[in-house]
Amino acid sequence: MTIYRERPWLIEARQVKGDLREYQEVAEQFGCDVVTDGTPAGTYIVIPYELGGTSMAKDGDYIIRDRKGRVYTCPPNVFEDRYEPVGGDDELP
Image 1 (cartoon, rainbow, N blue to C red):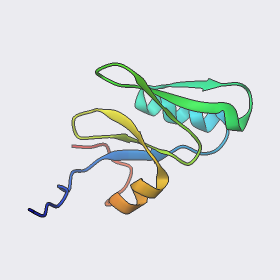
Image 2: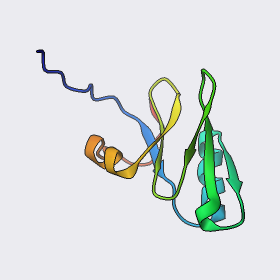
Image 3: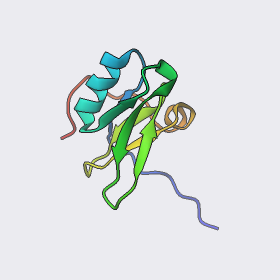
């Protein structure tokens, strides 16, 4: 068996949390939409996939934009194991 290390690509990410205004701000930043039933537990950011289908980000999840511009969601436990901050609020090169 061969051992591999994940390449150190840079990503943009933001955690989904807060009120509806915060959700809308995050959704706008990533080009996504917000759906809500009017309650915090019923509020999600809908992330369309390039090849069809969607994903839903809920409170606590991270939304990521990778180096190819793809946007997807990541649960906080996976995000915190895989990523660490490397800089300020700059956009990817």
